[in-house]
Image 1 (tube, rainbow, N blue to C red):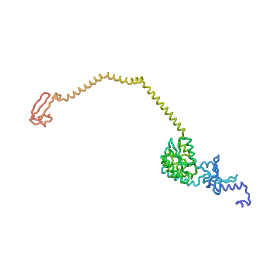
Image 2 (cartoon, rainbow, N blue to C red; image 1 turned 180 degrees about the horizontal axis):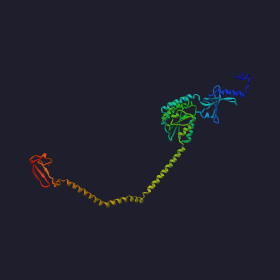
Image 3 (tube, one colour; image 1 turned 90 degrees about the horizontal axis):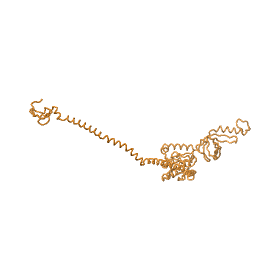
Length: 403
């Protein structure tokens, strides 16, 4: 039985049937979503990625072209269960069909990402991610604490970087489960132990790369709160550069990899030695300049220069003293003359105010029977005896009339 519209017993060429299948598939399956496990993940030199999606009963070839591959927000690997959105395509020369993937996410990642965003908003509203809470990393740490798996690649990378940068810095490994059941509890416990016993100057919390599910313990609310509450400055180093976890926001610093965290925490010994040498040279130059300046100042205080300085100070004083001594008699005479003028003026004033002077002008003083000066006739009676005192002598009189 042939396809509808074709003569019975119509014979297809391989190209014809392939083109027909290609048209049916590519027009009927646009923007489909396929979920499966990655197998045979093969990035190419051109930036395209070829792989296979499979489940228990079937498989389909897949390709992500360079532009779409650059937009991936995680690092896929064999064994990851993913959800791909794309369209079916037939590659005629080989008679294969495949899915051209436009976007890819970890299977179930949509729900996980939504949950993480909600948790992030909640913790941010509490202020756990505020910049004002961030602590500064110490410049010269002597001990670095690392909360991670003791057998993972992360601790090996941190140890290698630390040994290369500064072998004198100690590393304390606080062993923790970094994925799966119980991971969050052990991570929190190690952070608490490091703080309680003050084991280190800087605390690195992290692990190597993995899927979004693998990294979930570092986004647990308990872990985020433990990192934020740490009194020891913390560096979050979870996964690779494209990976992230909520403890990245709570930590004082975020490192893209465990190796980068070690580089942040451990100062380069060569730089320290160079800085010390620079400080030494700067101090030496400063002491040398100050010593030379002091030497020049001391040189000015030899006996000859001191005598000249003394003469320069003494001579003006002697000149002022000689001038004052010469002017002293004249100044005294002027002062005496001024005092005489003032004294004569005061004598004149006193003389003008003397009662005798007033009497000499023709005035007299009258006293009544009680010996008091008469200022009002109302105080006298007819027949009272009066004493009149002119400029010279005294006169006695009786009151015969008053008005």
